[in-house]
Image 1 (cartoon, rainbow, N blue to C red):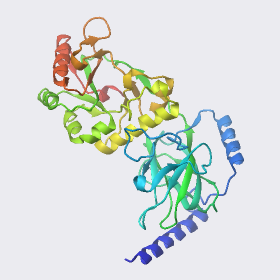
Image 2 (cartoon, rainbow, N blue to C red):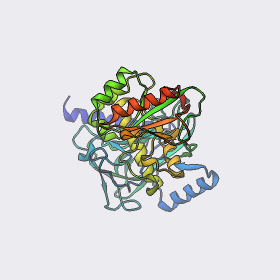
Image 3 (cartoon, rainbow, N blue to C red):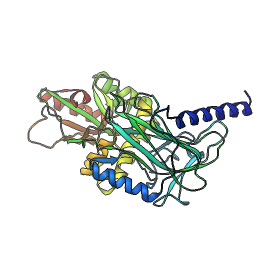
Image 4 (cartoon, rainbow, N blue to C red):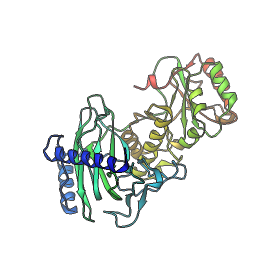
Length: 394
């Protein structure tokens, strides 16, 4: 099919979509009506007053948070853009509010310049998504968490100004995440996005814990960071069939994903979240904490196919904002530890030997094989066995 034929087909599809939405047959959303900033702010204030538990769940909604040096190269924090830095970047030129906005220039005839993020939701719950956009044929939409799209909001042309798109969706009966996306249309030129919102009930904050409440005679081996992938540790884990919980940083995991797949192959093992860049979270804003946790979740999910549900705060440093940010990223537990066997240590931070439910901290390092051996001996002395963490954190 020629480029002109493909364009005709796409424009026909766009026209059909527009007609369907305008007729109200595609669901609750239709072409957006221009909305002033004052009207938008008043509506938001009214909604917040009516339901004080409603919060904005979007990650980096105003594109104000700079990318970490350890993030995916060229990424926009909180967002995954299909064309990467060749298409999408943060601009300081005429944002809707604040100091920056997302600028997208689709590259070539085959791109709509989509940027998307995963939003944690509660099953069967209704949410309102909105964004301010500038450009021609700009769309805002979401799935319902079951890979089904909901009716998008869209505009044919903002005529050089900013226009607000709004749509509502209800998460599926078993959905815990939805995919929120903004995009343009084929050969319709650049567009900009700012002040994204996904308004809904705030999730219950994650639970902070140094150990797992259980009377079973088990302990939990957890291993952080991931820059040194010791083959001796890999053999020890395989030889002793040790279930371990790995908390690698995404860049370290991406450098050698096969290693982390192998060391977590024992049943009960898993890969969990340890942030993008290993910061002291208490020095970050709630929005910055959410970027660190959600972006790490998304990177690890892409690498290993399963979304983390446990977050290990770097340096064991966290605050109440961390618990909420973690929950907004789908984490149920913010886990520290009550014993440290890293780098030759044998520290138990309570009286006596290891106890049922203790969480043991270690690190991916050149001493890990010996650290694991020493931790296993300490567990056996206390009459305990290593167990899989996630099966005990329900």
